[in-house]
Length: 87
Image (cartoon, rainbow, N blue to C red; front, side, top):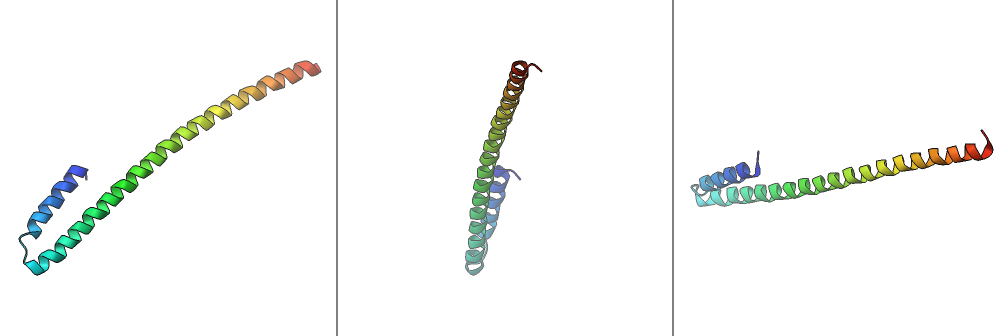
C-alpha cells in the first residue's frame, strides 16, 4: 500500500469514526491515531534502514576497490622480488 493510499484509507476511517456515538468515537479515534503514529514510526524506520543499506553498498564498493588495488600492488611487488632475486 502506498503512502497516498494509506492516508486516503485513514481519512475514510476517520470520517466513519466521526459518525459513531461519542463513547465509541473517542476509543476509535484513539486507535486510529495510534495507527497513524505507528505508520509514521515504521516509515521513519524504513527510511533509516534504506539509508543504512545505501551506506553499506557504498562501503562495500570502496572495500572491493581497495582489495583489487592491494592485489595489484602485491602482484607488482612479487614480480619485483622475483626479478631482484633472479627467479
